[in-house]
Image: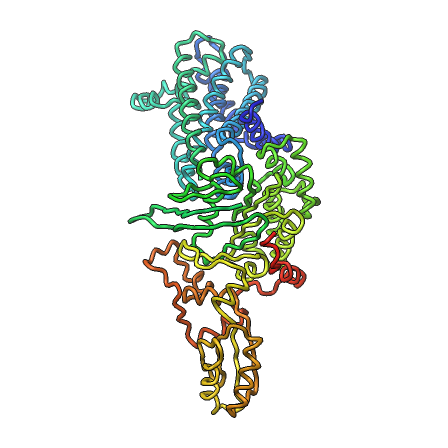
Length: 255
Length: 376
């Protein structure tokens, strides 16, 4: 084990310990996606829903991947918030003045986001099965992998934003609030974009989340050869790469 | 332990740039306790951040704990402890968990880090609070936890940035009791910043005063007071009419300076009040203006600051011109008037936390001025 791995492990253990001590916080942080799953999902299913997905599955087949993407958007996007509070307080400074590898600070924190996201996604899927979600293990596995790839990148970008917002913090809220809903609404998470006007569909093509959602729907249906898969995978990989590169640069220069 | 040469840091701000620290030269031998004293915005924290690798110097060099801060920051980081102005423990993390993490950050194995966490918890009387999160601790307890975090890896040199600011007098005394133990029991080199005069005076064996980014005085508190401020005598003649005559007599004392007359009282600055006072009283008798009352005061560090800059530390803090870049600092221009000398001379109103617990000040007075420590 190199020093780098050890440092990543140190940061990861620090971040995950409070979660392990109080696992219920995982559920509390999922209130919003769970509400959407049970309330909005049930409404959608009641209308017959946009279930006309190729493969003819239930509306849940269409909706559950969307909810997972939604969760993957809000969690990691706000991951920087905890870092920002530690930047404004003294905890980050205390670590930056230690010999801890700075890239390891980013990677360790990101790994924690990864673990939490994975656990939450599995929970959502487990809860969706009784509602009528058709579980296809290989597809779910592939879908989750692409999902956390995206989440990791978004989490890293959130850290960049946190460091850039230091010491005021206002910038962080302004940007995340400004981004959150357009990204969500222009992704077709809640309702299919096909029903929208042309300009809206055009705007969605600029949104990486849109490609991710489309790919997730195909993957969760185990349609691995679907043309929607490569763009989604590419979008997730690009976000991950950009996030990690910028994140690493930001944390090395931090403070 | 610390060797800084020409350490300078400039910050870019709107409409130009400002030097927060200008050419800091500093040598601190191992085992010394140094107070870095100055008003807000004087450059204390910026200096500290450069010495601890948190901020790159614009120019100049610093070797801290044997490593160069620019060439080998990782080497410096591994060898020093740092307690910043803010609380080091993260919200939502238990005290002991954070201490274990801290040990791991410094390369200890998890088992070793656990052992050290328990040791520092005990050292700082925090064992009963090991499972608490910072939000549930009092200000003084949090500060002790911060210090514990700085000590997990047994650094030979520890930097404390305003360790007691914002604490009530009792918590301050408590924090200092623990810090002073480091010195007596572990021979740790301690470098702390403060804007409490009294702390610099009693806790440190050496005081470095900084103003406008420059060191303006450096020495033991006693030496600075003797050389830069001097003692003050205040004598009230039995008859008010004798005041003028008494002032003339005062001016003829050996080394007398700054003779003032306030009301019916003559004030005079002398190098050593203990010998000057009997001499002055005898001279007054001989001149036929016997004294009704006499008082002598040791100067405070504020008097030292006043005589160096023409303002008191308190005034500087109130005015608070951070990064004041006025050309030419008013050094060596004692311009004190009769009216502002007496209040600062008593030291009472200068320090907001004069009412410290008596046990700590007793400890500190004896160890704080231990002359032999520097030579060790």
